Amino acid sequence: MAHYRASDSKREQFRRYLERAGVVDSLTSVLVSLYEKPEKPNNALEFVKQNLGAVGQTSDDVEALQQEVIDLRQRCARLAEENKELKAKLQQYEPSSEDGSTAN
Image 1 (cartoon, rainbow, N blue to C red):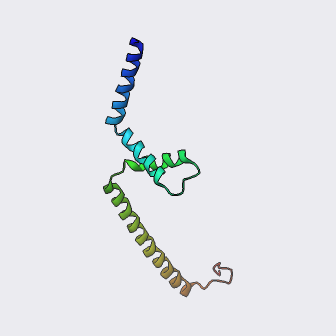
Image 2: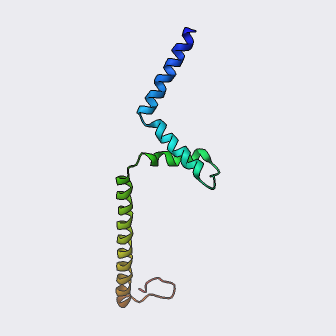
Image 3: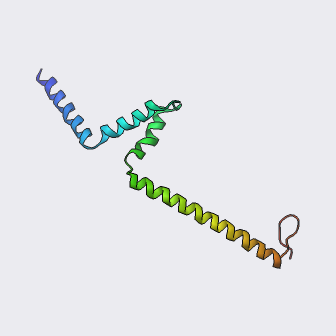
């Protein structure tokens, strides 16, 4: 009987450790998210792995990453436009042949 109490005590300590570390809340959050999905993913374990890392991100982290995506998309659009303009200028000086290579 004493062995049972020692084992039970260790389990309780481990459970409290997991709660203090936020593991229980994170797992619960991911599992609730999986439960609430109308269409369940084929690989539940992969879903948990992918979404477990996202649980710890703060809204500030998410907002910063979203802003970075917006900034990079705008930069990409500007660079694409600049590239188009430079190609047009280059065409004035080096007309290309039908296959897209430059004439020498």
